[in-house]
Length: 277
Ligand code: SAM
Image (cartoon, rainbow, N blue to C red; front, top):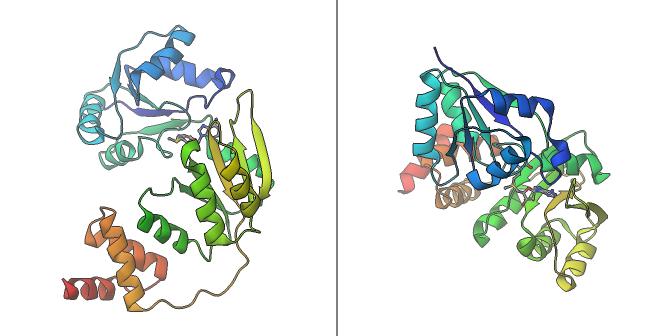
């Protein structure tokens, strides 16, 4: 008989956000897989819970995931927690969930804090349709490709960013979407110095060029006005395939992503890409 995987959301800064189900689940499981066992140990100590922990982070997702799966298939139940917020959202978990799903292992999510949802709700920007973009790549070329793929995006866009990279990211967003585009900078959510600055990309870029950002940020950017997207040429699509391949994707996956995005034939694009190699 197989056990289950529980994705347990943890606070993003305020221990008051610990839920009863989170505590019950952490108490009930056989073991906890944690992104950083030292961080999770602090939460467990706060709750007075003693439980076996193993490490599961982005650098051991392959072997770590296989060990967790084996234990679950042998009948144990596992809670996956990350340092803060919801597992699998810009945090370890996505691969483990896919692995469990492929093996028919039941996966439950114990809901709780998630910075992007909090930020969107507080942003004052349209919430009906949005797209979560996570972190922009560090590599300049991939960053440009990511932003250029959002050129015609009409939905509200949500980005995560580390404070030391915020000034550069704001300049890149301003250059991609224009200085007048509205942005809500949601800082230190759920913490003592929680703040939402509702402004424009131009003003935000200027402000943070002169003041160093402190704390954690989510950027919620207004979507653009609807305009017709020009039809891309085969050359454009092959260039996008190349960028994704440099990012580490297989040819097949890169072709699939570009074909879906551009609404063109996957086979034709694949044949054209192979024809060049
Ligand atoms: N899994 C987490 C979640 O559910 O939100 C996200 C983890 S990701 C590694 C960390 C990023 O989330 C930070 O760089 C920041 O953009 C955002 N974040 C996390 N906590 C935050 C907070 N209290 N206030 C603002 N942003 C936060």
